[in-house]
Structures are given as structure tokens and as C-alpha cells.
Amino acid sequence: MRRVDVIADMKRAKTRSEVEEALAHMGPVNDLKMLTISMSNLRRVGRPDKARELFYDAQQRGVQPNVISYNAAISACEKNRVWQEALKLLCEMHSRGIQPDV
Image (tube, rainbow, N blue to C red; front, side):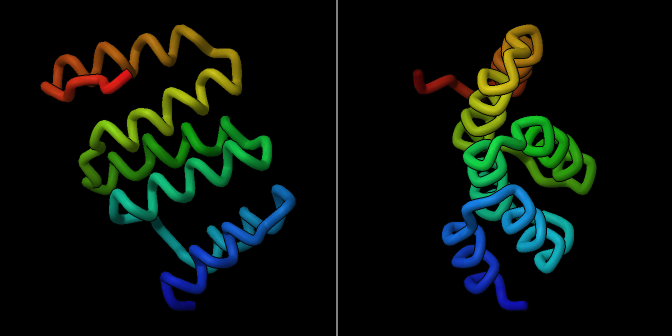
């Protein structure tokens, strides 16, 4: 499945299973744009835990997060009510020299 088709499917998705199905068709997330889009859509359909997992998995594959992807991860933490994780991400941003934009 082409990347633009996956993005369109995720944006149209109304349920968790539809977003997760689009992610399954996409395969591993290997770039920042797809990471951020995927995390935002997972959060939107009530899967902030999966969004955070995706954030860390992408880093394991070498994707270097930027302020936008950190914002999406922090937003997922907020939705999941894990403020300690959000604080950890803010500290990580600082240690990587990424300036928060909020």
C-alpha cells in the first residue's frame, strides 16, 4: 500500500481497529512524518498507549524525533494520564537540545 493511501486511510478512520489496520498495512514506521501522523491518529481514536509505544519503537529503528514528534508523544502521555512519562520526555528533549515550543 502506498504511503499516501495509508495516510488517507488513517485520517478517514473512525475506530481503533481502522487506524490499527492502516498501520499494519504501512509496516514499520521509519520516518518522522509517518511517526507523527500515526501517533496523532492513535491518540485520536483512544490508543495513546500504542502511540507512545510507536514513538519508542521508531527510535529503536533509528528515527530521530523532533519537536513535533515529541509533542505528539507528550500529548499521548497526557491522554493516558502518565505525567511522569511526559516529564521524562521533556527532560529527554532538553538533553538532546530540542527546544519545547509550548
